[in-house]
Image 1 (cartoon, rainbow, N blue to C red):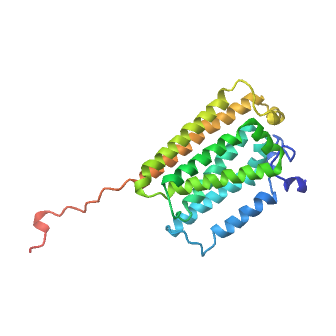
Image 2: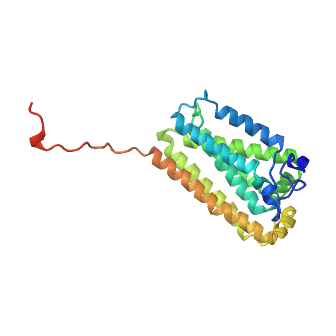
Image 3: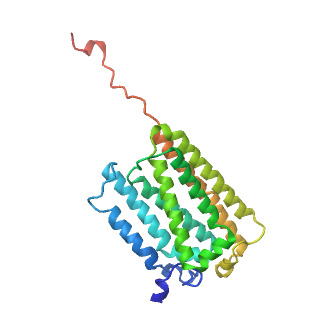
Length: 263
């Protein structure tokens, strides 16, 4: 049992089944050790981000908690068992990396080509993950699983860092990048939702164990990316817009003429 818990979240490891899914934690050193090292560094008292200390530290803490939820909690084993849980795990992973980036140091160069490259790589990796042959390789091979997860985490962090730390002049480009991400992930979600046949045969036994057909499980995965995932990109775009919008100068209380001091 302990040896299984120390393995990665692949189909040959401990599955998360209805009768005991809450016990299916993942303590694989390949993900747990880097996560602990990252937490120790990001939350150290001497860490400086150049942002308001309290707010930056809170962003990093929430981001780290979401990463732990995606990589250590039973959600990780569920992701190897159900396509719907896999999609939920990826959305949590992406959100955790974005929030971690929000509390990180601003990049030396933000916006422009770097923003476009980060957004493009983030999107390409999301589509690559869901090609059936790549999806199957990630579920069967530990190195492929770790490599794809790490690549998506780094790309999401880079995209979030470029988006949240871009200057006011880059606000339009950031909004376009986020809305394009919303559009293409929504398209991927719609394709998975309306596909007529199951694409991920390896998770068919897990779906049936949960009382779902493989096609319904896949449709749930598509809906999770399409709706909650789209709302997350929309929320990020709205947050960037509101944060970058200059506030009108506040007017002090108007003093009646008879109360004004004589000059």
